[in-house]
Image 1 (tube, rainbow, N blue to C red):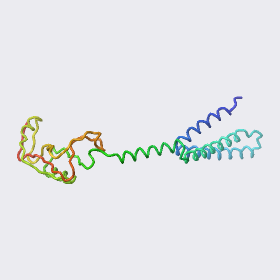
Image 2 (image 1 turned 90 degrees about the horizontal axis):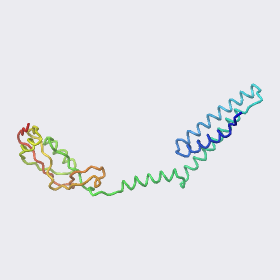
Image 3 (image 1 turned 180 degrees about the vertical axis):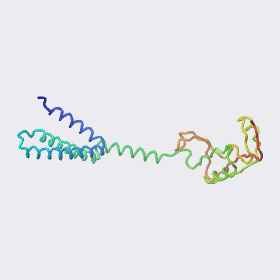
Amino acid sequence: MEKPLPKIIIALLIAIFIANYSDTLTVIVFLISLLLFIYGLVMLFIYLYQKRQNVRLPSIILIISFALFVVSLSSGVIHSSEDSPYIQQIIKGKNKKTAQQNKTYKSDGYEKVPNTFLMKKEDVEKEITDLGLKVRFFDANLQSEADKKRILIPEGTCNKAETDNTKYFTEKDTPDGESGYYAKKGATIIVGYATKDYDGR
């Protein structure tokens, strides 16, 4: 008859590995040990009630449940220790997040200038002023832009904002990883808009 001891040892080693992986898995191992204990206890009572001589199976189940309980208990202690790899990993993750939050960027103190092309004049004014910037409009001849893109630029819509009073930042210079033109709060953004339709179709 095949001895179950080697299999039990292998199963316990796997349980130890799983329980040490995270708190959630430790709780799962604990619940499994509890269910096995109840199952083994009920089975033992049934065996004794039936006056069976061989109570090996329920005994093995109870031993396994106790071993899993010890594993979950020890894993909880390990996880609560500041020197444990699990806690060290959490601390490392928190430190990395804090470092990212405290990191300074070249674009700090600047606001990203929105893409105003084909936006309505009133929408451009609202969006730019909401960013803490000022806006100055001028009558722009957008026929060449309409011809180049082969589109209709309706009256009252805007061209891209001028780059005056702005600064270009690359992806690595901004916290959100978006490159583009940025301006300091209070800066005046100059935007050309169409006072008539420009048809380039």
